[in-house]
Image (cartoon, rainbow, N blue to C red; front, top):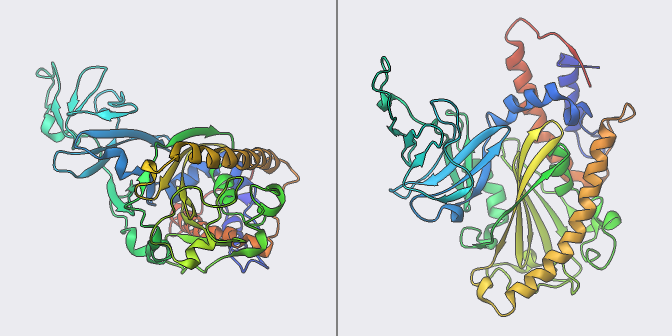
Length: 400
């Protein structure tokens, strides 16, 4: 089978069948450099990308920087209180105008001291008075569309992109009782990983492995056989996975029960399960009664990625008795589980490179993978149609 051919992209439809009939994506989708470039155009240039939380830019002048698929992004709150997102690439010689996070009155390029406002407008450019036709009023940092959803900041490189929130109504309704806008956030952590971003996204949503890989006191309260997968509508921008627990208010720590204050609006149904909410291609939420872990996936190459991992807790939880020690209980246990997952992710990526890697089949406990495929495949196929144009097909390329 050749990559970038009608047969290859038509064949992706077999990954979207009912879980009992579907097969996995081709291994080249996780390893091939040309496919990664294709994927950037198909997904990351067009879809809403989570970059962080509004609490990271609480005050005017607050800012943070990030990067997705090689694009440096600057997020700030302007003097009017609006959250702005823009390229951090200076429009003079491509120096980055900001690094890390902080608070600023504007952004000064360290290289030649061009100065940009919090809105990205160029307000000063030293010694440019002899440059023919130079007009600083016509220069600004490229800005992106911004949408806030439940306290998460999303950006879109496509100026014509449709709004995100109307396509997340089902997901939002399912997790409404966590009241994420009011949740308290802890400082996110960033890691770099040597596997494709989809390997991570799939592992985050895989109920099948939980009772096998994670067998033991830290995970036995959330057995794989209690997984369920609500259907997402074709136009939805996200999907869900539930996993029932053996007792209410289960939590990843040696007691198996919530040790932090639970989110106050949760129903009995919410408290009897873990909820996994996903807004591809960048955001996954792992939700238990006393903690929400959010994962922001940021591809850096065909077989590498970065991830920002943050924690949300109930309002007032940080002031509760023994919060630091109780949080440490959860994070120590979660760390052991995450280490198992990451070992698997590393070896899966190695296996995907093998000549013996095939398109496998799914267990019923992998329903979320099919939901993910149903989000991915039509976008891949639409991009292939755009590349081919109305008449001239692109030349086939051998799959890696």
